[in-house]
Image (cartoon, rainbow, N blue to C red; front, side, top):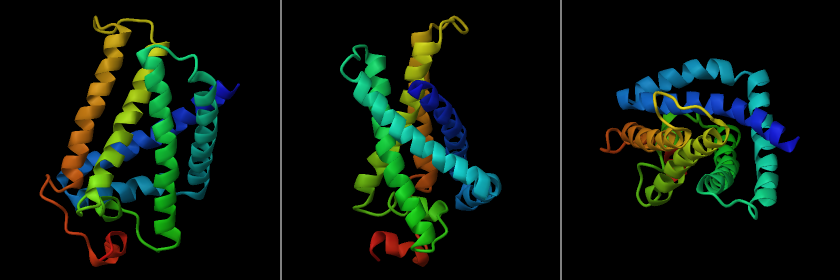
Length: 204
C-alpha cells in the first residue's frame, strides 16, 4: 500500500518538476523569458486547489519515501536499487530545505520567489560553493530516481535499446539538462546582477 501511495504522489510531483525544469531551461533566453514563463505556469499551480494538492503530495512523498528507504536499504543489492534509494533520500532532504526556503521567502520575507530568488545564491561567492552542488545534485537525483524506476518497470527494448541502456540514457539527459539550466541561471556563466530587494538572501 505504501509503495502505491508513494508511486501516485511521485507521479503528481513529477509533472510539476518537469514543468519547473522546463521553466529553468527557458532561462537560457534570459531572465525576462524565465519570469514570463513562470508567471504563466503560476496561473495554474499557484491556485489554492492545485498548490494544496502539490504540497500534500510532497509531504506524502517525503514520509513514504523515508519509510521505504528504511525498509529496503538492508535488502538492496543492485546498483539501480541503491541508486533509487539514495537518490530518493537526497530528494526528500532537498524538498524539505527547498520548500522551507521558498515558503519563508514568500510569507516571511515577502519576496517574489521568482528567477532572482532562485539564482541569488548561485551567482554570489561564497554561497555558490554550496548552492551549485546542492541544486545540481537535486536535478541529477531526480533523473537518477526516474531512471531507477524505469529500469525496474521497463521490460521492452525501444529502438533497439535495452531497458538498462534506456535507464542510463535518462541519467545522461539529466546531466546535460543540469548544464543547460546552470548556463541559463548564471547568465551564460557570466553571472547575474541580483536586484537590491534580494540582497537579504546574500547578506548584502
